[in-house]
Image 1: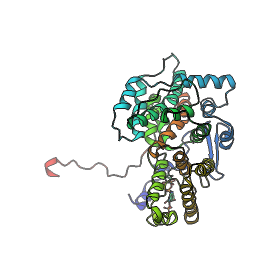
Image 2: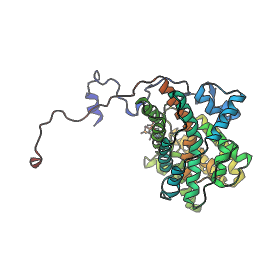
Image 3: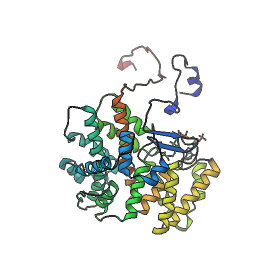
Image 4: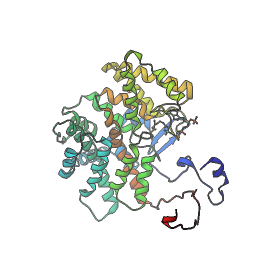
Length: 389
Ligand code: ACO
């Protein structure tokens, strides 16, 4: 439909048509606040910079699920529960072992997460506490699915989970078969913190919409994984790394500035830039940029880091567009040896905390989500029998 036709629509009947739902406030939430002008992100009261400097991922999970930080014994209890739930049922592991080795890891994560619905934690007679237990189980099990699929697709045996250590530590251990060093664990933990929650993004909106029909939490998380997978959302981190690796393949002809200018000239998007809400630097990208620089110096990936900085400068100069969370997370993961097609899975392993927090919030005060669509077709056409069309 042309813009002109859209203007002819009766605005009394359809007062709020809004492409991409930009600026629409669909929910109230205590989980996070984003100030797109200031570049500020708050999780349940705490600035992301404060959390990045002080928290662990497990503390952030507790914060998002309870709207307050845990005391020592509550934190230990949550850690124990997350460890106790580190078991993926045999039929799900069999699927992971037997599925197509070429399958997209995000597709495998989506399917395996959906299968977990058949093996939930023991149920009580209180639905909200069942949801809370399921949120803990999902947060514990998703990293195991990701690590297990990566091992299986490479013909390696699946490493059993540890009965100790943080989510970040256990994930890297199960992925590589060796216990990670302190720095790798810290990097992974910080990445999990930075990706945990982010307002009414497409995947969280999907999870809340599914919750609003009184469906189950596994359906909501499987749906959210599907929404996150796309390159306009969480899939951008994999796309960023592929972009940099394609540039690397050009050898001495690699020119990140010209590459960026050529893409802009063709009106193509540069992955990892732009955001619906931030009109300035994404605060998460500050931390990831710092980490990417430090890691690149240690691992010898300075060229990738230098190119990232050149692309950033060109985007700022040409379009005044800043990077989002996905731009520098790509080189951070690459520097700690993670394959590019797993990056969005790591995003999911973290964001499951935010998705489930929103699910719990929606379930506690639900109303069916049911917007309207603007019909642009004709009405009451005359029926023509099939042999006369
Ligand atoms: N590269 C080049 N130009 C861009 C980019 C980009 N990455 N992002 C936005 N623009 C330009 C658009 O071309 C458009 O320009 P125009 O007005 O001259 O046509 C203008 O900025 C507005 O862009 P929209 O696409 O309309 O902005 P919208 O809010 O709909 O989209 C989105 C936001 C999807 C994130 C977009 O910036 C984008 O596609 N970025 C690349 C993909 C990406 O990095 N996604 C991850 C986002 S963060 C996350 O979800 C975890």
